[in-house]
Length: 195
Image 1 (tube, rainbow, N blue to C red):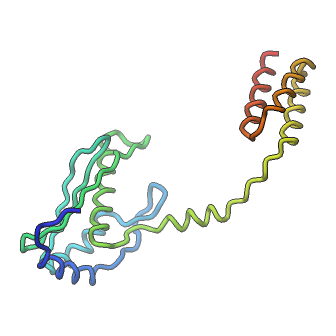
Image 2 (cartoon, rainbow, N blue to C red):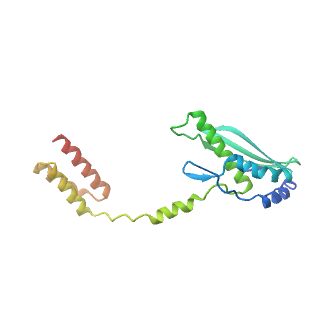
């Protein structure tokens, strides 16, 4: 974050403005979550900021692989507070590169103004992720004997010659992890295709 040398005039007015600005309820859905669109944010904060002699200035720059968004809170006294952040261009099958860049700019502007004013404008997805992880069924512990049995059943089904089966059983002795047994299973499948 960058600021003017002095903040003695902007901070009291920003303090008053933030006392009036409320969090906004999401009014849009997309990209897997609910959020407040940029126009709604601006419509809600602009009158309050203007009443407190503050305007918002947002500019767009380039960043490696994407864009940068600078959000400045400019006070009538000349004092200011600003911050810049970079984000990648949004890539989706339904968008060309210019549309993706535009979506990233809008996203950055929404988050820039919301962060500078200390308001929440989208649903908290962290809690939803925790609940999903909490409700997830625990993985069954890996059972090497069961894996060996499944590989043996596959070799029987594919009519593996006995010499191949012995070679595979020798691999069981070296196998230590689920990944090792998965690799053996895949190798048996591949070998079965050539028999």
